Length: 145
Image (cartoon, rainbow, N blue to C red):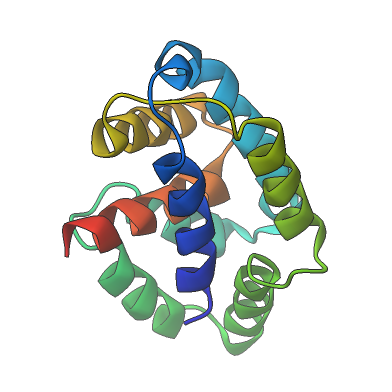
């Protein structure tokens, strides 16, 4: 699906880092979460629950696939459209992530996987970053497999 392209964009940002960002995990996670607010506001309760489940499972990709089939046709269509916004270069979400990347391109990290896990945990713990945490869960899963 197209959300893999988005996951790659996020991972490319994280890969371009090497140390200073390690001290800014909360700020960076919050800034990244801000990019997903427009989608989070529009999520149906069932879609929100699906995204939350994705952050709790070992295989968020499979959870997403199974979860999409359990949604109503309208909910599934709307969620698919929202996910597609993540890869649409003209969308507000994509432009926000692009601006985030540009603003933070000089940040560095010491360990990419550990930093990604910290960002994910911070996004998940915030409680108001359902979409961002779910997409980070997918990114982490893709780097494992």
